[in-house]
Length: 344
Ligand code: MRU
Image (cartoon, rainbow, N blue to C red; front, top):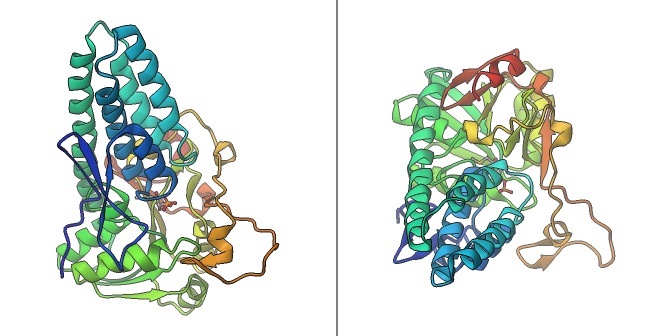
């Protein structure tokens, strides 16, 4: 059965998220009725992927306004700012989250009544969601211009419709090439520990009928060395002004192998993923997640009790390993710093 892949939908004053924790075995909706539900949904990765997190956060602010709407203006603004802080801190690495909250917060400092503010927040969240879809389609077009008529593409993590509102970033480029009739084959990294590749990317590829194979992360080097990969497409959670890009753990390793074997390595991300306030990737906070993600697989313990764990959720790919960055404003090539600043 083919399921609609829109990661989120706001209706009847509730936010409906596809619950990405239970895919592909179950296609279920997680309903956020208030902003605390949104904080939980982002932190627990009901919803994940930088752009999807940003849009979810924006609707979280709308839910907060609905909750506090009857308060006098001053108290309303105090509670709204607290809610924004809480949502803002739900995950640290994807800058789209902070970007969306900042954009929503600008509507809290004016002379409007709470009801007027609520209306404006709702419109703004809808705009952010609509812009995300348009942005993805644009990146798809630009990215497709780099894809040969016949190509084998390696991906990491999930960068598809589930990681955005619809369509996707890196997987959006795959979609665009496939829709264009190109002879595309995808190798999808399973992406330990959360298995976004196995559970989510593979599911999207099967839904779309895009020819693909799922691989253990450890198989990527062999495929690249053996000349089986024409190009690599990955997403990003935060890009520094010099082009250093944080993405799912394992991306850096892939970039090193790609460089060794001269395979083009493209980062596909909207300009909302660029953090113009940081010069290099050293300034990016890397989230560390629960040790259980490593010691257990889907609830089953695979490591001994008492073993210590190191579990960073992201790593930073240095700009010198990146061939180009595909954004909705065009394909950014080197020198990244000079070209990224122009996007501001
Ligand atoms: O921990 P996640 O699943 O939120 O990490 C997601 C990624 O690393 C994606 O590659 C990135 O957000 C870009 S998604 C369009």
